[in-house]
Amino acid sequence: MNSRQLQYAVLLSEAGNFSHVAEKLNITQPALSKQILSLEKELGTQLFDRNRNPVSLTAAGEHFIREAKELLYRESQLIKSMEQFSSGDKGQLVIGITPFRSAYLIPETVKKIREKFPGVQVKLAEEGSEALRKDAAEGMFDFAVVNMPVDESVLDAVLIEPDRLALVIPEAMDSAFKGKDEVDFSVCRDIPFVVLGAGQEMRQLFEKLCADSGIRPETAAEVVNLTSAWEMACAGVGATLLPVQFVNGKRDSHVTVVKLKNSFYLRQPAVVIKKGQYISEYARYAINLLTKNED
Image (tube, rainbow, N blue to C red; front, side, top):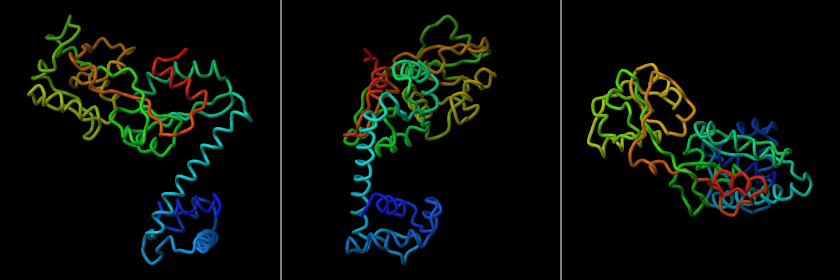
């Protein structure tokens, strides 16, 4: 039994199809079948039920795949922990993060990392929060930045500066907001809104604010990302709810930006790492920068 066979078995358990896995691995299907059969012969038990389509795991196979994933993960962590001895300050730092947060959190962080570790390449894996939580729990990143809550039985979490929310209001609708630093969401009763798609966290926060304030504002448009919501507000379509960190640095004379009262902890982000995962020197430095614990 070797790491290659473990990898093949894991991939087959996920795809459920020999030809798809063989194509992905750039090997022939008979070669893949031979490796799996050799593994099963060595273990003395059948791992896959080939009479089903897609191919499924036997009870023994389910146990084996769980352990195989852990072994492959531990192997990758051992290799990564040894890289510093052979490459010095060279390496790759993989950060899982949402596109919105990468825009305001990462540029200055990457600059400082490169200044301290000029041989390190930073790779951003930009995904939605749910995908980030799943991949972080599987050790796919050096660390990820996601919104709480997370499964803290699997992930270690270090809180970072919370998102504060702001209203972005077109100038034609902002008469009640001019000159104010903060407003209560209840004043938005008669304003049409540009909202994010159902299921997105900002949409859920918007709906929570509506429910808490007892209002049901008109939905003027539904968009897929924060940038589109900002542009819609600037075009006068309707007001929108955005994190202050996203709005900071943006300027448009056609909108008024007003912070919401009592909204500091509506979105609490954190740096998360799989429990027991190796943390390189440059990953630890990056985490300290993001959590304001830098030297």
